[in-house]
Length: 68
Image (tube, rainbow, N blue to C red; front, side):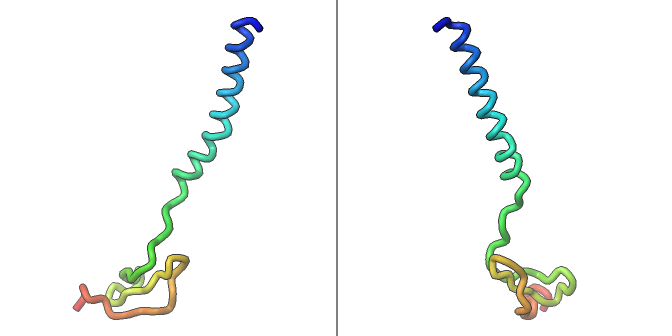
């Protein structure tokens, strides 16, 4: 096999791989990390904290200790 043909094949394979990987990297960078489980200041009422269970906000609240 001629050297130029090997070079062309390598360039094509690398181009395909980069084209497949680039969107995955872009998606990973644009997806924010999940909110860890815990108590957080309520966005609408800073006098309370609201519990996040790692998947979403719950109805559980408690007084915000920093507001006391």
